[in-house]
Amino acid sequence: MSDTQSGTLAVEFKRGWTIIVVAAIGMACGLSALPIYSIGTFTKPLTEAYGWSRAEVQGIYTWMTIGNLVAAPILGLLIDRQGVRKVAIASVIGTALGYVALGLFSGPLWSFYLLAFMTAIFGVGTVPITWTRVVIDWFDVGRGRALGLALAGTGISAMVIPVYVTWIISQLGWRAGFVGLAALPAFLALPAVLFWLHDRTGAHIKKDVSEINVVRREDKGMSFKEVTKGYRFWALNFIFFFVGACIAGLIAHLVPMLTDQGHTPATAAQIAGAIGAAVIVGRIATGYLIDRFWAPGVGFIVLSLPVFSCLILATGGAGSVPIALTAAVLIGLAAGAEFDLMSFLVSQYFGQRSYGIIYACLYATFKISAGVGAPLFGFTFDETGSYNIILMLSAGSFVGSSALLLLLGRYPAKATV
Image (cartoon, rainbow, N blue to C red):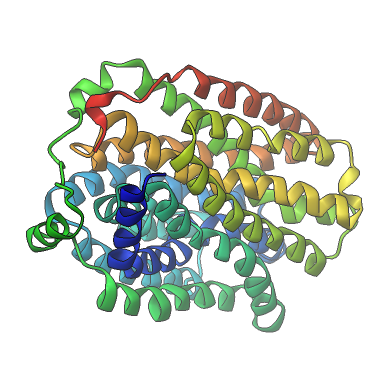
């Protein structure tokens, strides 16, 4: 890295460190983290309370996914046109109220699905589209590292939420578990957004030009119509669909898979919590590496790691705590790379001109796959009595999807921003 780049990097981080902090908190307390890292802890309590199958309980997460899917394209357009701050404030409040409603409401299964759907609609602005857009706006030379640090917020959630919710459920019941989740956006994310989150305005840009001699080129890049005519957009959709489905299924079912192999619920939750530490490492390490090396190559290596987790779990090797931890860590490293890669690849291959809507489409694909993956794992268990078939299919999906990254080619010069 040249002295000029080093100086620019230092200025970027001095200027935008609060943006990284608020984005990390937003990620930790948003709908990309809370549902996926908590649903496993609710699976057995809700099954015991209502007699629902595991697949039916996982359907709560599916309906959150559907809600995000419906609202994500609109969110992308709003952020591109109106900025991040207002959307984030409204969505953080919506997320908190939605989880309170889930904890207080009594009714048939469809009512939980409806509440999950509405929570996702009103809380959609807490997903990575929002937080990555503001980071992309504030960082250029250090974009990968800034994204890695911001997106590491989900790693904190992965590490804390399974243990946090399991403890609340054991002490106060599953309803209190949902209310405990509501407290996170209400008392952590909302203050951070109110005090620290600011859209990058013309005044900021003018100041940046004088400090680091960099002109923001937000108008550079491809239109959405141009993007959809190329193969890269569709390849990325394919990649993130299969990766998202497999990782979501593994994370959502890791606790019950581990208890099925002899671990206590508390031990299983602690092992699952190791995913969080690995996500943090994966986020930061991936961000650093994609700033320095070709991002698809980095992605190929990292997204291949869960193949070993699938094999460990399918062969019953996770009965040992060290081996189970290894499987969890490998899942977490790959989960940590997902959104880093998605954000960085969109900005590098397509530019910032239509970042919001392009990312929203990829994120919608990812959420569809996650919504399919979690209940599909549950359905496989309900029908066969084990997860082995879906685990082996997932191993193959990780191999094929990660290999497809290698076909993306060099970054187009016109998309550089």
